[in-house]
Image 1 (tube, one colour):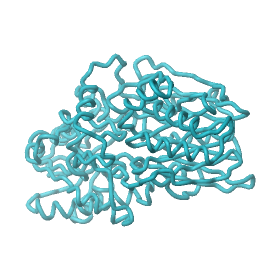
Image 2: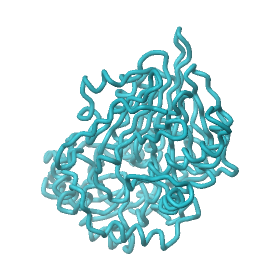
Image 3: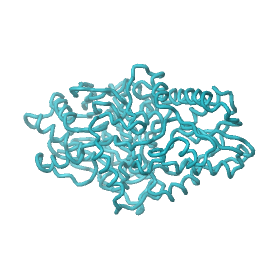
Image 4: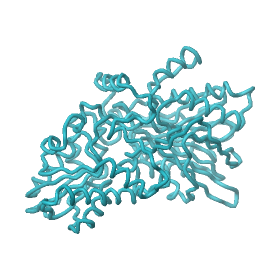
Length: 512
């Protein structure tokens, strides 16, 4: 669930890319990188941690040029930070390519073998993004008739990527001597939007994971990149697009709307804010229908992504809405922490209860989801310690029962609290006096109510249905085995840096 950004402008783009990454920081705090292009060269800097920590003035000065791409990394499959896996990735054949990727390939190991045995390409990391880069490079080589690249060649290459790559991928890439390429997998699982800005010097274009980056940087939202579509912006600012997949099926990831995306974003024509408010409507209806006996004195959100659902729920049920927790915004996300002890400690560091709001009250806590249950249990304990008489807990999404394989580091089933428990057992496990989950049908209806044209969604973590059709029990078992294997990486210390605080500097990479 990384953040990606690509810009072709009429003036230097280093500040635009930096500011865009800061807006997309919520999509990945593990590492960040920017590449720009000028005078036949690529200029790159990347390193571990938050965007503000990776880039200094000296780095920004080296990022010259009017076009470029950027990436903020969120590790998947339980991986810790590896300096070699920070993005963008580079390869110099056939034309010189830079690539940044959001998502996860489900056939990366098969592609890796093919690259080595058939395509004679070597990869230096375990990243599926490097695999995707080499597939694109190979398909460009096959599609080209010489040493020249044109739109037809690039679209043929993307069609070749779609035929070979399985899973979820939203991509921005730089092609030396040509321009910016962006494309999305045929299912449209991960988001990708296009914006433009008309200037006296000509039209500027931006491609980003979320519309919030386009809005805040002064561009105007044009549309989404369609599933299977490729978009090309050359260095003169000419825009061309083509559908490159033989078959498409629009099924955006539901967890983007539940938790991942910023509320002020619009993706696939769906306002994240409106969707979360609708989730509160449907959750209130379920409470009224199934738990009318609950004596609730106040509704409180678990900051921040459940706030809009909680506010709407309180309004519908005519209950007081209160803010019972204060969030420390400088602590990393807990569901990607490396161990239970770290997660438990992080919850206490991240949230602090306001005792006056809990003392002597029956409170309904609303969260966006329950994954492992560790955070929920700690929050309920904090509410009781703050003086709450009874603590009810509501989840704006259904039980998370299955791992996600499309770019979100969801735990294996053995780590998911809902994988082998019913609602009553989960309620006891987290220590709540009552537990209410959103129904999956209601969640889908909440999103459809905002944009009725989107009818299908990727909801595998809730129902175990993997939309791409290639995820087998054997694949899921291999994920479990890989996650259980001991890691040689330094564990994340919770502030977005790895243990040694090192920084990777790959400035002035020569393009072909």
